[in-house]
Length: 260
Image (tube, rainbow, N blue to C red):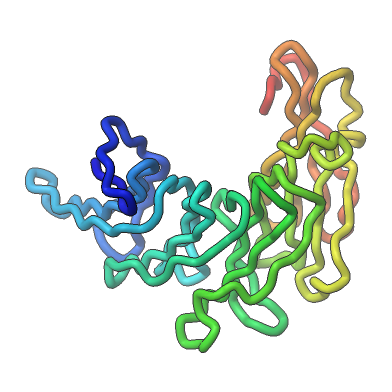
């Protein structure tokens, strides 16, 4: 396909994400190198219809806003966040986000001042970028605040509707003190900065990089689970933290748990 900006031909562009729409019987498909987002309608599987939305090159992953209407996705090496209106099937906004944003699915929460926001961290710096997502507000689809985390090398941010915490990992940071720990913000008091939890230390593992990655909540929203990654010949673990107290609850490890 042709790239969105330079109109160069790319022989083998990759699919970076496939997400099911909540508004129509269609898939939202990110084409990485060309920077195009495809809306593939499968209502008639024998005659598929495809809507092409030009965005920005190097599309990667993304997630929904709190209403499940708007899909926010990173064009990471372009330092952009593309916002797709899945109901009207159009590009809503293209937002600047510095130094290789990497949201995973991103994190939705209510900001004390700006209301509903969606958050992404970054690979290239310590920025945690907050984008306002209420389309009725004057500041909709703009960066309303940039928090400072531990450092770059972050892959995932996470929160939960029942939680007051925002968790930020940094597994690719070159400083082991950062890559082996996690930062957690109090959503109601973002100005106070973050607390650092020594997840890898709690895991009590042997030699290895012990990278702490991808916080995930349990169904109840009262526990946060972390993977602690080491090589396949080294010991890894899952670490469970109590979301309310931010204290260690359980360490799961064993010979069968390899780079979980």
